[in-house]
Length: 321
Image (cartoon, rainbow, N blue to C red; front, side, top):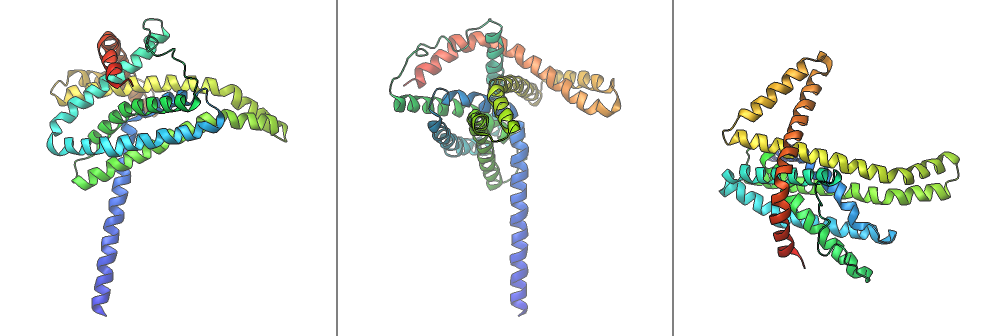
């Protein structure tokens, strides 16, 4: 009997350790996911365009296909690559992270420059005006394009997440990265599904609602979705510049160039503590984020000629099909 009790005690102890490990994985995955906010928001802002122009009945199947492709990108390709980096070349994580941060700065700055008329963005794509009459072929092309774009953003998300995970064992890192992949993919494409179907919901409420308030809410949803998508794009662009700039500054600090990080900290601290104490913390954070974003925009604008004249043509030539 005493042996059975001891066995049950051991099982209970193992269960507690397992539960603690799950909590640790989820906690670390949540924190790491938050670090990738810029790429995540931009992913959610970009994806709805891939279902634009299709019948309503095809929107969710296309999103589901892109979701599966995104999970494959993260779990099959990027997760093993990230673990290999962490195990055999941890010194390469910071430079790769800075490269990803520079990409975020470039993408965000290109969107700003395009709005201001300083850049043509992606409008010079040689296949931009190509029309495909077969809906199935068009759906295939759009889904493939979305999955390719997702691979770039997923690589940035996984690299940021890998750098944000505290040093731990191989299996803890693997479980945390896998959790990050699933959490972010479900969050992004679940949100995208809600966004693209929101106008259909609004139309159904506006036309079929029994009560006047229901119909009014439906009309508001239909009218408000274009503005909401524009707002999401603005927020995504700002987040990309902020995250990209902060990655560059932090990366320089890790490489021994601490001047920019220290200067930003001092300026943000001075601004935050010049305001009432109740908002000092938030003001300091906002000031730092704003400075990081301005630096990200400046770097991105400098990178636009390189990106548009060299990197983008090479990318199109390699990955065009």
